[in-house]
Length: 352
Image (cartoon, rainbow, N blue to C red; front, side, top):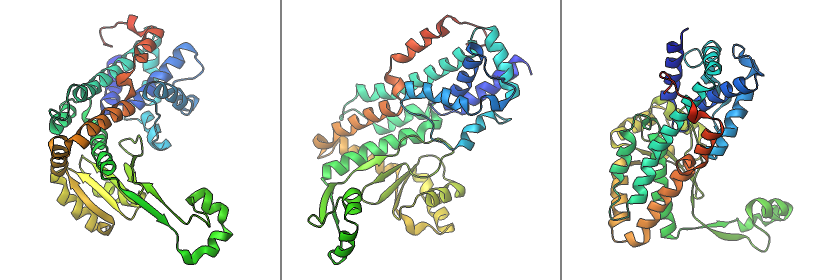
């Protein structure tokens, strides 16, 4: 293998990665550790397979505020033959040592590029108010950036959550939790359980709670299942990209809720309904919400009759969720990290 082939393999990994670049960062930290500590043999996978996840997570926690939650199998795909197997990594390691960390610097420059692109979305939100924000233009920012297109589902999830959360709050929805009064004997028998888990006692057999919607945090491209859930028994799955039969089965099999809400593009609705009917899970789907519905609801929330109550809240939700999802877009600490490691001083005509 020559250096051009090794670079092609690394570039392919970076191109396929979502915004957070978990796998490329793992490669960068393996190379950094190999260069500075030298306690692993890059040609022997087991000398760094598990340890490198910890090295990666330390960096991700610092700049992203989160770590990969994908399965161990999915995380290990980074070492597959069609990604960065030990033979390729060993070659990259030799180049990296010869050039004082140039490949590490290259990977982190690509990470900075991605975060800079994501900052465009944050900038758009910051520069617009409820009278000028256009949801379609906001989404188009990500569709038209090749490095961000793979993360459109995550951006779409932010958009859906920001609106749904604001509407549920504005409606002032309350949920009543009440036990069957005929089951007081069981309550007495398991009084400690009832108080600690359900917050019920013999003297307090019902209570009200505020209805809320929650995001479940970070998932990756191969993860399937739940994106959001509500404390009133609703699961929400965002599918802005195409839904296959396998993925449809994954959604309903991995989500234990009986009421599932799917948000998708208009062109996907009929396909999704057909797939769900084929696998016999249509009854578990409460509703399918399309992009045109979202655009209409956003228009009402931002410029409709109740925009004064909703508009600013929706945009603030989007801003907070972008920063939470991609904290490096708002962090000066990353530039300090680049300086600490001396990456800003490294230059090479191939690794730019």
